[in-house]
Structure formats: structure tokens, C-alpha cells
Amino acid sequence: MEDLEIRAATVDDVPAIVAMLADDPLGAQRESPEDLTPYLAAHARLSSDPNQHLVVALRGDQIVGTLQLTLVPGLSRRGATRSIIEGVRIHAGERGSGLGTRLIEWAVDTSRREGCRLVQLTSDATRTDAHRFYERLGFTASHVGFKLQL
Image (cartoon, rainbow, N blue to C red; front, side, top):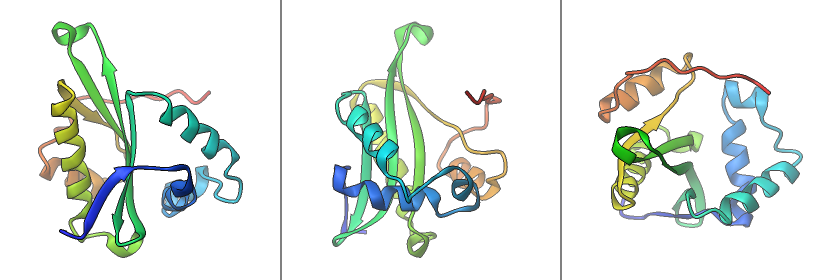
């Protein structure tokens, strides 16, 4: 993994990120890689917000992974800042290589450096392999998540 670089995503990375978001059964239903307009607008919003860290993992010049880390200041837990990990995707050819572990470790280390007291994430209820992966990394399924589509 020494040849792996994790860096902030640039606008030029958006097509590769969207392709990874769409490359699974759930993502194929909700992503539209043929129209990058909403993704480019989202990248502009993310890039201008210091509490957002959209990153890519590169092996050589190929993007092989991505995630978004959001810092959320709060009043609960004695005014703790927490981080939320979202949109974790690994290129199909890299799954099982340890890259997902490296990305999550990056997110946890960054959260510590930013003073966060808690790291949280959600995973679709159907992604049982992902649940085992996160539990192996020390996350606990301590809450039930709810979503409301708008």
C-alpha cells in the first residue's frame, strides 16, 4: 500500500468518483453518470466548505477509492465535534485489497486530528459485507438509522 496516495478530490476527479458510486446494485439505481451537472455543483459546494473532506485514493494515476468525511460541531456529548463518513467506494478491481481499511483509517486519523470525539457512519441495511467490514474496524451497530426521502 506504499504506492497509495489519499488526497482531496479535484473537479477532474468527479467522473471517476461518480463511476464508482454507480458501480454497485444500489448505486446503479440512484446515480446518473451520464449527467455530471449535479455532481459538479456538489463538488463546488463541498470544496468551499472547510468541514467537508471529499478525498480520492490513487494508485499511480488511477483513482481506486473515495469517501467523504464531514465534521459536525455539536452541543451534545459536552460540545463534541463528530465526524460522519459517507460515500465510501472502492474500485471493483481493488476490493479485498486492504484499500477500504486504509481509507477508513485515514478518516479516523483525520477525525482525531480535527478534535472529533466520535466517528459515525451509516450503511444500507442490505450491505451485510460492509457491516462486517466496519465491525472488524471497531465500529459498533449501536443505533438504528432513519431516512426520509425529499
